[in-house]
Each structure stands twice: as C-alpha cells, then as structure tokens.
Image (tube, rainbow, N blue to C red; front, top):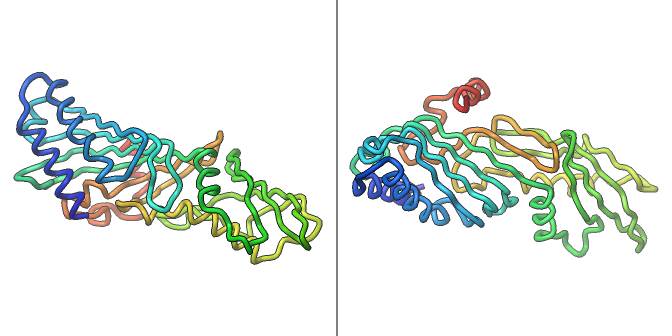
Length: 260
C-alpha cells in the first residue's frame, strides 16, 4: 500500500496544484495524470479511464468531490479478468502530498462468461485429474459447467449447475453439496466435486487484489457475474480502513446510500 499511497497522492497533488483554467481543462489534465499511473497502481488492463467530477478551483485546492476510475479488461492478480472494474472515490482531501480525508469508496466488478472460460483455459487441470471443465455459462443465478470425467479410459460428458454463495466479504464460493449433476452413468466422487468447487471458488477470491474490498452483494445473470461493494483504495492511502467508520451490519444500507 505504501507504493499506492505515494504514487497516487503524488500524481493527484501534482495535477491539482500545477493547473489553472476552466473546469474541464483543469480536470482533464488531472485525469490524464491519474490515468497514466493506474496500470502501476492497480494492475494491467486493456484500457484505464479516470474522470473527476469537481469544480476547477476545488481540484486545484486538492478538494475532490468524486473521482471515478474505470478499467476494461482488467487483469487482477491470480483471479479472473474483469470485463469492467469501476472504482468511485468520494470526498477526497489532499494536503502536503498526503491524502488526509476520504469519504466512501465503492467498486463494481463485472466478470463475463468469456472471462470465466478464459481463466479456466489458462489454468487447466493437472494431467492426472480425470475431471475436465469444458465451458461455463451464467444465468438465472447459477453457473452451469459442461465437463467430462474419465472413467476406465473413456471420457463421459456431464453438466454441473451450482448457485454461488458469498462466503465472506472477499470471496464467492461454489459448494460441492449444492451442485446438481446431470448426464453421468455413475455417481461423481466427492473428491471430484471438491476439486470442481475449489477451481471455481479460487477465481472469485478477491483477497488477492492489490487493495482490500468488502463485497456486499452480487448477481449471476445474463452471461455475467457482477459484484458490488466497498474498496479500500483511498481509505488505505489516508491510513484508515473501512472498519474505522463502517460497521459490518451497516454494509448493505451504507452502500445503497453511497451510490444513490
């Protein structure tokens, strides 16, 4: 976090204090300076964008009402690529190279079927593993995987459907005992179900992100999984954490208020 703290604060302060003029001229230059650092601070992406919604004089003074960062094709460390990752930071105050105040920081991540299938293809099963996931689709709150199981030298196709569950504020899991299996002539061993569940769950482990998150809710509809919640991006920069001002029980209500 030290690298992120120094990098983003320095970039923002340099942009805020060196520019004068109309609102869009000031904000556009500041946005460009921020955008150029996002790959280093947050990770590689097909495209990063930054948008500052703020009067010019407040931007120059280091008082930011809202900074929105949007990434497309974001490669998150050891997890699935996000089609869209949006981070919205509100009520920033920067003084003497330091972020001294931060409001609420929220995030939205959208992971498509294509992203999920690419992740599975890039991390295939070991040769000795008899289970192979061929493809995954997302609809009606479920993930449906088409897979094969090698039995006595023959590949048997089957289908598994499962409802993901939010196991913690950082991870979506797929539990073996909630899976429905269709198409196999023999029962699927428990070890195979555990392997399949672990494979899917590992891709949705957001504790591996370069910044802490608190997922408050998710959907699995229309070919994509979408997660929303709080992120510790600027809160970490200011030396505070979400737990300093947000009770876990208040997460859903506070998130709804923050995004209205």
